[in-house]
Amino acid sequence: MLTPYLIGLVALVLVPAGVTVAMAFAEYDLIGAPRWTGLANLVELARDDAFRTALVNSLVFALVAVPLRLAIALGLALLLHRRAFGVGTARTSAAMPTAAPEIAYGLLWLWLFNPLHGPVNQLLRVGGENGLTVLGRTPPQWLTDPTDARAAIIILSLFTIGESFIILLAARAALPPEAYELAAIEDATGWDVFRRVTLPLMAPVLGLLLLRDTIASLQFSFVPALVVTDGGPPPYATTYLSLFVYRNAFEYLRYGYAAAATLVMLAITALAVLVQWRLIRRYRRWYGV
Image (tube, rainbow, N blue to C red):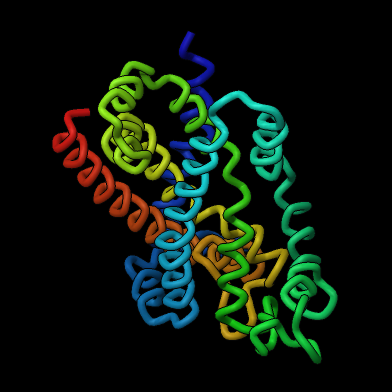
């Protein structure tokens, strides 16, 4: 019964991964035969300003977006876990953006972030004068300013939390009600209940989601950066590792160089997951969960 899964695993994961690792040490353009170059691609990556910028952008995105996404998903799950009027609609609204096709989602935010006519800046201008915000400042230039463009990619990522929200909603519903009844008898505050009951009991699920989102964060930024900001504004303000790999492989036909960047991306992801896993294990030992 495992045969179909094993065939898919080998054909779609293990074989491509092996080819990528081998290609990282070669020069290949799909025209001529691959030529072994050893560590030349990795050495070039270390000297490539575009790669270093993409690496920093990806790390900043992961460090900022992943915790924010997880915190928002957890907050919504705790807010909407009880049955009440309108809760079903609110749950659907929280999950819907994740179901939208990535290209359509990116195009929607391209319109929303339009500096002149986009709804976001129009809303920020409410109460201001001469096209300024209520604080007397120019609205963010989401598509032309490097810092604002990076913030735009993070902001649009905060709405695609449907999977994490549903998982945390189910995890909250599965918590034993006796623990909350005991907390109510002891007259515990809401913060104490969250800190001493809810958070420790949900820690294993939160840890798994943290690991998953960290791994996925390096791929999530690809479509928004390509569709909304096209990797800019120059120089490489929103070029992330995934976009860097795509352009070198499919625009510049440097498959060996792109494979080397993929190998570095995999190594960074594995290191981040290892660090998080050790922290989670230590947390579980502290709380006995």
